[in-house]
Length: 118
Image (tube, rainbow, N blue to C red; front, side):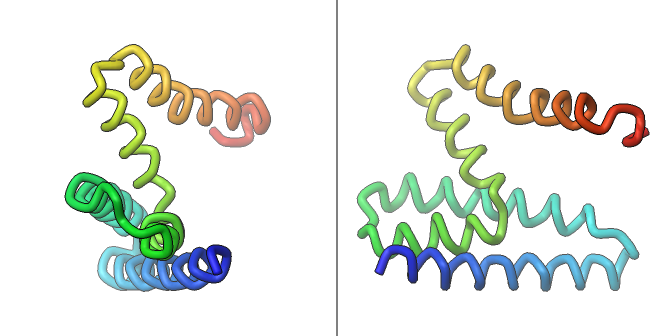
């Protein structure tokens, strides 16, 4: 049942993101505003759910947090992890997670693709 919930939620979240991207492109001929918006909305929704419903039943967690928000944006989990570390006073770990996710991803992309990105 868990895999089905994640599968259904992921499909729904991906379709939602697709809709935001289509709308963004029709308004601005650009996709990045939609990406920014879905990342912010996804992060805020995840944080809201995690703080207001910390013991959410597993089937809702799988459908909403993992499925829908995971399909909508993977940025939501990343933001929540950093938020949680800061709440616990683990500023160094939060900085490390941020740096590894953002800077390391960019560095690996540049290392793999080299000057082809520029």
